[in-house]
Image (cartoon, rainbow, N blue to C red; front, side, top):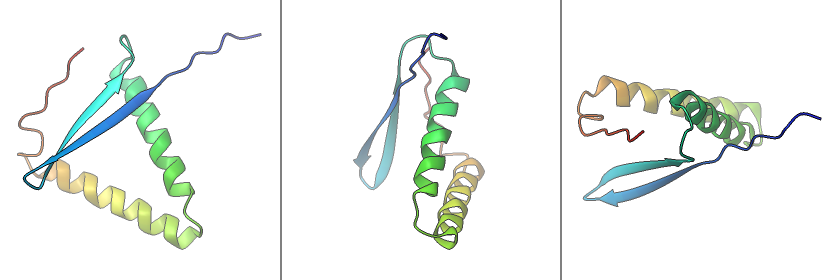
Length: 84
């Protein structure tokens, strides 16, 4: 029997002056790839949880649009810090 390996990632959001500050919490030793995989899997499940394919499509488009806006705006990650 293969050993089970549980990965856990939590996201805390603080809203200050209309800005969102994210804190991603993960078990020490998790790689960025593992953290990304967990977050993407959770996001995919939340999109799949929508009642119809049309609503799933809308949710997916909203996520893609949000990510595009974050990566186009150079100020979005100006104060990003990754503690390893």
